[in-house]
Length: 260
Image (cartoon, rainbow, N blue to C red; front, side, top):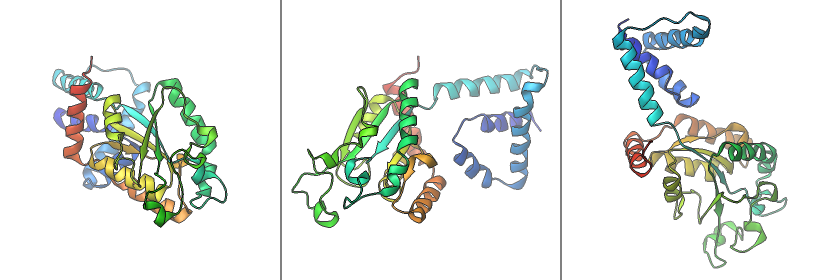
């Protein structure tokens, strides 16, 4: 194997992309390339037990350049909490998502961790004017100023958390979410909340087309049923950011938030 080929494999293995994206990329490779990636991955994992060896000058330059580039574009993540409101979590409400109550403890723990690490948190909340015709189709829910539109108490926002309201399914539709994420310098969103097959799926689709990377932790999402949840998760697992939009987003963030 040439040093150029080895450097390319090392760059792929060390790219730090989400596991699902790595699996998708490897699955699309020819058998020989998949085997080479596997071999390099095993070698990298075993390096801690091997006496260091100085690489050739050309390989070393390629590796260092790739590491520098990856540091410059290191993912800036925000944790999004979507529609974890009283009208979805209170038993008996017209749009109750019973499974959403089950993820509250894990989401509380993730919020605590995010606040400790300085990860921005953005609450995205459904909100409707009392005269909104959308209520004709879905029934009265998340009306501005009501208790039902408020965040479930155990998950209440803290000082410094951002709050974005939306009138429909996607968190990006007629909302300030994209601008909020731009202001935070975010290129990757960790999507949590309910419901998986409606709000999270539509939000993820819009995010990917806008060039954001999307992560949906299994234990931090809730669908209206296990089947609907499973299908939506498989769909989101398969999708990747639209490459032209991804490149444009990273370039935009580099201008808005220059790397020191």
